[in-house]
Amino acid sequence: MDFLVLVKQVPDTEKVKIDPVTGTMVREGLEITMNPLDAHALELVISLKEKFGGTVTVLSMGPMNTVDVLRDAIALGADRAILLSDSVLAGSDTWATSFALAKTIEKLNIKFDLLVCGEKSTDGETGQVGIELATLLNLPVVTYVSELIELGSDFVLIRRSVEDAHEIWKAPLPACLCVLKSVAEPRLPTLAGKKRAMDAKIEIYDTKLVGIRPEEVGLKGSPTRVVKVFNTKIARNCRMYADRDVAEGIERVIELIKTVLEGEAG
Ligand SMILES: Cc1cc2nc3c(=O)[nH]c(=O)nc-3n(C[C@H](O)[C@H](O)[C@H](O)COP(=O)(O)OP(=O)(O)OC[C@H]3O[C@@H](n4cnc5c(N)ncnc54)[C@H](O)[C@@H]3O)c2cc1C
Image 1: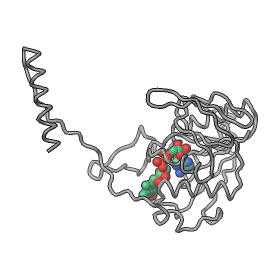
Image 2: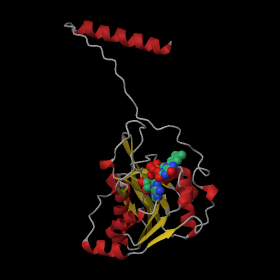
Image 3: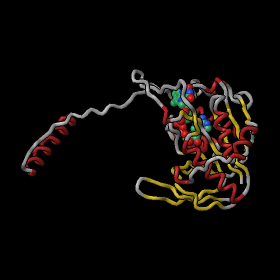
Image 4: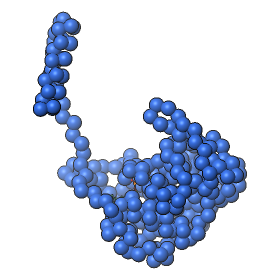
């Protein structure tokens, strides 16, 4: 079985600061780390490799310092690490990101039975990349995967977590899974793993090498624009009632709600 895991580098959220004036993340001097859900995705496939044999490839699109995150993946048990990095990718939205990842997989002819990614990143948080990539690669995709129940030679059986229930789905391989943290608890790297990671070759490609034209990615290749980023403000206009009679108090609250609703309707 061959496994492909998407890994995104994100700012270490425990150290994130928000600029109070612009409302945007202060990226200067931020440490980077592997997107936490991707660490769970990686652990899932490493444990599957240990059970069934095969290879684990990790793929990322990001700036050059993403190499550190890919080395972490090797230390944990990945066999091959690929980075797509190029200045023309800057400004790419989720569609352009997925397009670039799909092109890389196709051009490098990366073979896999299972493509696994995190449900969402901790910075962009759209949860779109896995689904878009699966669409571009024409793969079946299951989202909100909370447990992999069985992996057969040509199918995967999973539990999917929805609002107040669980669903069981079976998908033919190759398939794409977008996973939640409950799929597996990430291990810590061993000393041997860390040594292997230090010597490992990280394959780095630019857009030309994988056949992407500059206008297909970056702002030009992105159908969406971030118009504004802001913190939501919740303003509460509290009124305190000190009624001794509960029934009377409830009547007053009902009247108040009615007034507000009438105001909204009008
Ligand atoms: C208009 C616009 C402009 C943008 N400009 C920039 C910019 O200039 N610089 C910038 O850094 N970001 C930029 N972004 C953000 C960037 O598009 C997203 O970070 C990226 O597409 C991933 O989306 P997400 O973080 O919501 O991932 P999600 O869809 O939430 O991630 C789901 C999973 O997909 C995988 N995944 C996501 N991204 C990657 C990746 N890059 N490589 C490998 N796997 C991945 C991971 O497994 C992750 O767990 C921009 C976004 C928009 C909409």
